[in-house]
Image (cartoon, rainbow, N blue to C red; front, top):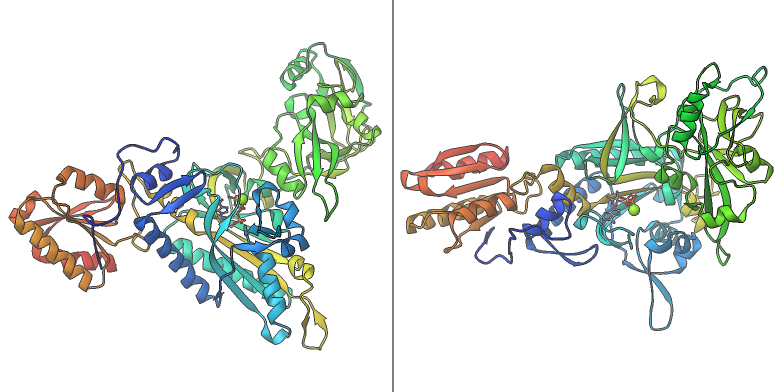
Length: 589
Ligand code: ATP
Ligand code: MG
């Protein structure tokens, strides 16, 4: 098929849109792929829609290849199923809720575990029907706090979500493994540079879970890789390599010191150095200080209940910051915020700047701690009185930890698990997430199936998502250069772009003939036949739009030569009568 640029609904822009910071966002708007309607809400223009549909097709083929059956749920959903799993509440402000004319509550689906579990319950009753994998490619809605970078993080976006149902855990393992392989195929076919990272399971619940992260500096996800072996994990999922417990017996007693003005970790470290304090036999440093970060934890309301707030402390070594995303993941579905001055004022035992674990324990405050605070470790920490700190405060002797939590920042050079060297930090964009959900949803809906022995059993579920619209932004992000986009042939809106940049009627005629021939051979061709547009503008547009092959009938055409530019690579000079074959050869390679 042939699309003529003289007719295509397209206006390319020379200027970056004012609200765009990320290259993919700038280019997709400038090249006329998408257009903003409202924050996080975009229109798909003809070029963008073609790419989106092609990405969908690749995903669809790989899902079909593992036996997935495509269906489509509505995006507009009733409240009840989400009430049943408590996600109507737990999803918080990210959920678009609305009411119909009869005041019935509805929502715009952010993800569809509830609907799929219900559908299986409605339609299946025997183990003979299992396993089954269902999927949809559908528009999802999430009222993201920070919609960002165009379609990279939208409030309306396209996702492929699939769900596996198996009668036993081995079945789930194999469904999960097949999805994992399908995802690898998809990302390999699209030539995406990605890493498979261990992940936390977040609001979904469940156990095994991995994320597919596209490597990109503009990514919001931080992940680690090990210098040896193939360990990779989202920072939220990194498990701290805690030192072994130490003997408490024989450790010197805790001793209090006075520290006028030392209200920060830096000041305290300086103070410790000035006083030449040793701890556990070495000179003390920031890593020996135990920070007590006070937080307020909000537990979500259970059905019809009130949400509950609780004061808690997180103990962290002084050379690290609290990583809010890690703590958030660890506490999910509860949320937290740092304690305000108002909260400090509410409790006499919280001496701001000098809070220590001892007062927290004796006042019944829940104490979370970094895994490095194992029994027997000795710390310098606040002494719960103005200007005073305590040295040699031993975990398990002078204070106790209620719960260990992964909340401290992960640092480059931290040890990797299983002696796989150290950790390196990288940024990525989450493209896909696969979960072994287990029976959380099938139990919530009481999906009862008769097993081989005629007994009732509950199937186990997996849930697997890929961001289709996000993938388009990722491709733009990973493959662009300063001139424009550069699509992989598999999903480019057109495989070939032919531009006539020569005023002679003969060149236009030859162009017409060439696009006709390519189209006859089954290629999708974009034809820049605009009569009054300068060659310079045509070249710029060709680079901006990013088709993988651009044939130019320009100045050299009078000598029988057509330029073939391979986007981002070399330019070939091809005799006019060989150009069609050359293009076909390259496209089909
Ligand atoms: P993120 O951490 O980026 O918000 P998520 O953990 O909320 O992602 P999932 O719920 O696992 O994502 O959704 C599956 C996939 O859908 C993601 O891997 C991502 O590719 C895509 N996705 C999620 N939220 C958005 C969004 N707001 N805009 C575009 N794509 C999204
Ligand atoms: Mg999200």
